[in-house]
Length: 461
Image (cartoon, rainbow, N blue to C red):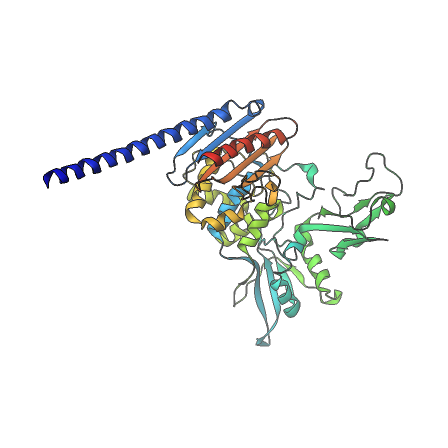
């Protein structure tokens, strides 16, 4: 009996030793592969032509597996939207506040109301053509009417700090507003004989050039400081029916009332007014509209700058009742993202500004926080999926037909970044952040090289 017990003990001990030895061997192999990945980034002939940063993080252990210039500052471009995403998920609920209103009672009979006094929340979806299914606030305005537009003394600049001044005519650079309408864009569509304009308010601002301008050629553009949209001399023959384009509004914040009246078809004799200060006994109420995840998917998948900027204003209004981006940014950095290894210089919601600076380690930590706090499938759905949709639809396609990269791109001249999650062949998810600055020419070689390395990670882990 003693011999059998002793034999069992020896066998159990030997088995445990074998298991421990196997684990040690596995960890040693993983560490060797981590070093291999780091070396691949460090020695890459493509990455060496510019300034590259890279961080690879295990969200289960919190351990950094590979790091190349991870503590250095880079221009993040649209990777900045990851910070805006974190802010929205931290501050907002399931739906976005679309409109604030205050019922104005009839002075002679307080039971009856004359209408609503309304105030904007920064909501980017109001009358936006991509969010037609969530226009309940507008339908209620049509039904109830309104008496005035109340500005809460929010100082909103037309553009974010550091934005390029000559981007005023580009569709990726709409102006900011307290209560934006139609995405603050004018949409032109060529018909067989004319131009269709949305909103129709801007139809009268179309102006066809009376001679062929060799400099402007076939360009359609808005004058820098007016609503005039200049059409080429030969626009009738040069643009086929169905051609469409978008041009940002000028002074969008000041046009809210005019656009709203024009859309509601209010008669001139009953025009509401713009109000600078007003209090009601009943106080202010809030109408909610678009589901938050619907807005965030468009912001992340299409890298929509307008939505990102406005959503940062919405967060500021919800948290501090003031539509100022710097207020909510400071709160996030001082109260929520206090553990970031390098404090970012974060100045806008979209990443259009080159004033923004952040490190790969910063983005890895923000992505880690989101991974710990959000349902994993829901979180992955907010990021473009490689080979499937969004800004990575043509890249990072899984070898087994399943997407394995869920990440946000960030691109501008001389900048390309990619940060997000990579789900490996055996099911393990890792966090990564690639940041490339100061290259000349196309970003195609950098994408190809990142794809090669991400495929190595997918195959091994």
